[in-house]
Image (cartoon, rainbow, N blue to C red; front, side, top):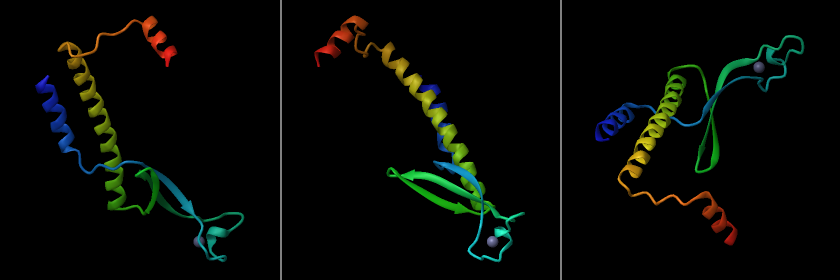
Length: 121
Ligand SMILES: [Zn+2]
């Protein structure tokens, strides 16, 4: 339906920022051997840092972020991306149901025929 589609796309357009991937909290040691982060009994690790891990063209890309406005924008962007995926899923369901309604869908073959055609390949 056009109205539902408009509602979904209106929501999609309001989603900003949008970021893929995920955030991972990290506590790290540094290169200074005398630093408290290397204490054997009570290591005082540096952090938190946040590893933002995502994929660009199939390659994993990592970016370390400190707490602050940049991190919060990425966090917001990831939440928005999840909402975007939900909206696209909703849109897909509607589009698919329309395809069937308008009679454009290919007549479903019975399971029997489907199996037979698979075996022939
Ligand atoms: Zn240290």
